[in-house]
Image: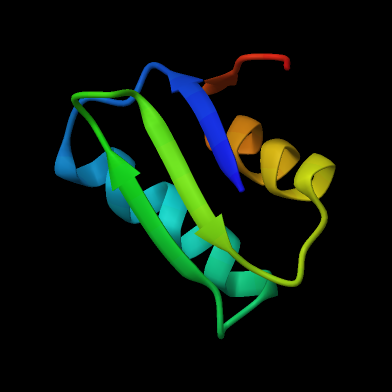
Length: 64
């Protein structure tokens, strides 16, 4: 799944989002692209849960 995320701009952001997703699905593959403002996740978690995890880290997930 691919999420458009606002507010990510540094290595801390990458780590925070990646760790939040992997905390619930350790097998998840997470790729954060700061330039594009996206999070790509291959995970067993449903999209709404991944979006919530990203938002709980302080970022805004675009709807759609």
